[in-house]
Image 1 (cartoon, helix red, strand yellow):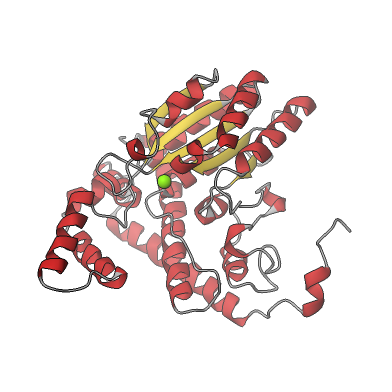
Image 2 (image 1 turned 180 degrees about the vertical axis):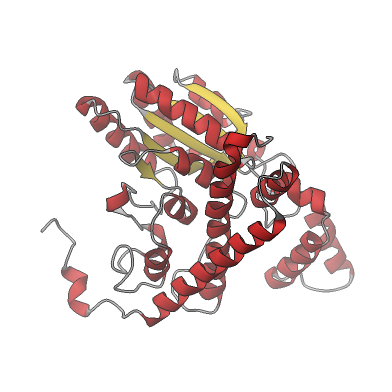
Length: 347
Ligand SMILES: [Mg+2]
């Protein structure tokens, strides 16, 4: 989407938010790989435009239920990178005092509800928040992120039926990162053809958008949030993205056949190394089409909203923020033993 003059600031805000998400995740993944914290890390690379586009369009009282790999959603909503990193490290200074780690992190001050480690399990909780807002008539909208796999869970359909019937003020953000050429295309685990189709049968209005285009995600989300605020009703936004750490199935099969033909055992590590090599050889246009950051960068430069030097400055500022967050997390103490029994129940 082209950047018009009044969107120049917005484009740069999105660029900063998305750079933070990408860099934070890269460093968090590296730290997990070095064994600096337990529980590992799953990146949501390729989904930065959805996290930033939707969260920047939300208003302060709105309630967020991040996705399963929703660290990017938490960051886009404005949580302190230092506290998010310290939480991943399980430190006492973390967002939830080191008690939740990656899969249950929350930031109550920002109305960011806990990430949920169970696929689709945030959906009924988000419906509860939306029901509360409808009863209070306070104009708050609940936003719930989830992935394409969530649509195969029973609770997905129960929730859609409920929010559709009760016309609850909720924005359902479905991230579909299963395009036909991917390793796990949607058609192999869901016969509907699109996730939005599943929402329509529950009487919910839907849109399918390019989830790699941050400006269109922002515009669509702003419009929908305003409309939900005016007259409460659920909306289902299906955002199409690409899994950026993957090659196509055909390419993967070719790699495996090549390894077997040369008598090598196709180990996970070796396959990962080959995939990285193939990805590194992809031309710039391939990335511009799929990588939300590269796409926005190209649009910013094309429309002269900023020069490359300004973008480079943003990138280095963001890297400094992330490095500071890592240093903060490393220096922070573990929670004391007594903390295990505090904050478990409301005190
Ligand atoms: Mg997926």
